Length: 98
Image 1 (cartoon, rainbow, N blue to C red):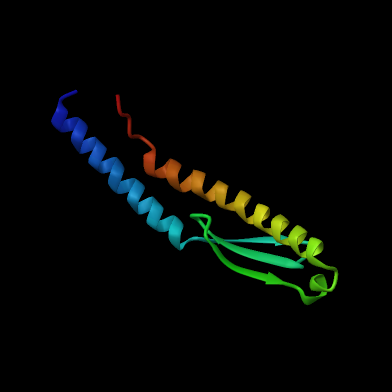
Image 2: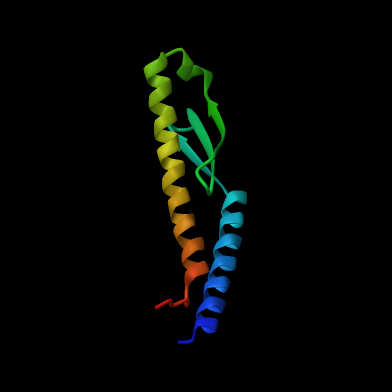
């Protein structure tokens, strides 16, 4: 494979990855814990966009709040992981670099 062809493939891959990253930045997933006691909205780049906590949880103390927030975040992160794998897999599919 000549260097010019290799550079063209690398540029194509970079463009696809950049587009995929932009798509992920605009993607939102919702993590839910405790039957809706806490909802965490997360971007496809793992940025926390919003946290909603049911006031009933607040009355149960800091440990309860921490627990539902962590569970909702974990739910959102696992959903984001699936989307990230799909989007980045599609962006890099068919590109073989030596």
